Image 1 (tube, rainbow, N blue to C red):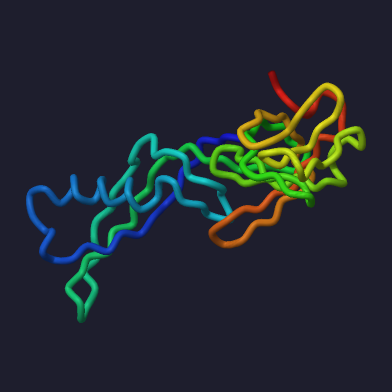
Image 2: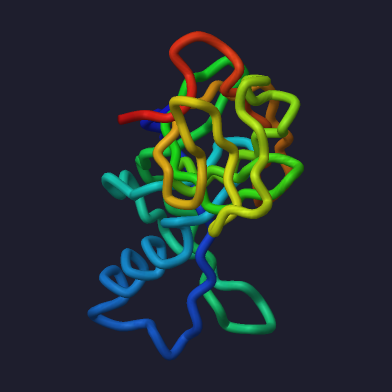
Length: 170
């Protein structure tokens, strides 16, 4: 699910960057540091919408660097158990398949796939196939997240397509 959140980030600035363009450099540094990263507590930071406050820098003794605590508003993506999402299959093997849901990689085990769909190792590329559908690389699927594991910098998810209205889309 997508959220708009107010977050903070610490930026260390070397004294060589002090000057008239320091604020522009801090803004660019914030964008490059946080966009596209994953915070376990907040999820994937998709984009910075606005910078709320750059803060006044505190010069650190010994190094001469300044530390700025910036507050910003961002769009974040955090998956939840029970959420239904659309993804694109990236890899298929006999254990199941991996689907990319934006920055999130979701594994769907062969036990969480409809029993009518059988793994076909002889097809090229490998796929799960039934009478009506085929799931192989680049197939669009709708799946339900049945579990997530959050680490400090990544989120792992397990999904299922074994329920009504889930599976191949289109």
